[in-house]
Length: 181
Image (cartoon, rainbow, N blue to C red; front, side, top):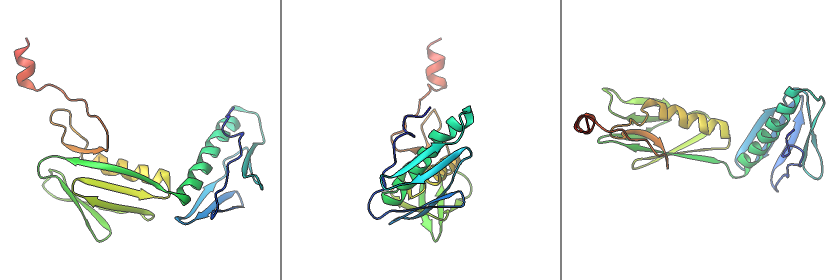
């Protein structure tokens, strides 16, 4: 059983929460997020906060209990402070810029890659850093993963798109491998 799901989720000032037809809605300064209530669960909005109660005792109900608590916590934090991910571009001639509602990446291919920015996501480019922000944690993470997938960092020179702070394991090249034999 989830210990975190047993605790009530506090609702900060300026955040409005509602429950309509199995959809949990959370509204704050960064917008509105909707989270569908998972099966076997009941969400209760109380004066102390938001409580999640399990209607059954099977293993799926216990798994959904902790998941629902995390989804609601993420939604509440998203409408208050939001989420952000940074991507770094490394490589000679590799660059990114914004053109209208699209991110244009020049990462060593014969053509530039145009990535349309999803609704609810803000992207800023500063030199070789792409800053992705938004209120939906899953959408921010998915957008960062899609952009990184265009040119993953390669292990020999480390060129490509990587998360900020990501350490890429480097391999020895042919010359180094050939001299050790």
